[in-house]
Image (cartoon, rainbow, N blue to C red; front, side, top):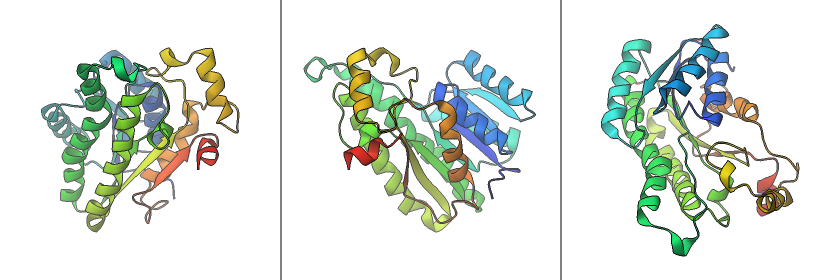
Length: 253
């Protein structure tokens, strides 16, 4: 049920902390994985870790907010693997700039990385899935701050709320072609984009809203990714949000 052999996965942001764990999960389940990012040194390290375990992976450079880059990547992925069966949108950036100090260049940068990239990737790779005629799975990475807005991350919260909206809209749009569109809502995982805003006071506040009283580890996202990627395990699941948050959602409902 969770076997992903004979599939090809594209992980945009697969060179990041969370993206690399998700890439490894797909490879461990048998999928060939294309790691897409701007930092090729990190992307190659993820590929090497996958290959050391017997998996297949390729690293490709692209700006996730540039449609031309993504179209070039698609062509290379098809040449390498022959199809696109799973797309994970895992690019992310964050900022704790107070609202009244927010400049529009920062606003644009965060919206580009977190939201525009998702729209563009779904246009490029989603169309490929539809044209293939055999369905597929798109997994967008949202955040617990996409629901109840969290202080100090205004633009990030707006961008992830947008990811949720895109997920539900495209789930409905793509359903007739059997392309499932879902999102994972991670809780607090100390990844690169949020380490700088995790002050002791911030950590105390987060733990106060997390019943499991700890941060998540990247490996704890693996099961959710494989489940949503599997056309057998999640064949009737689309437009859904799978929370991996240590109970954070139970505290905020």
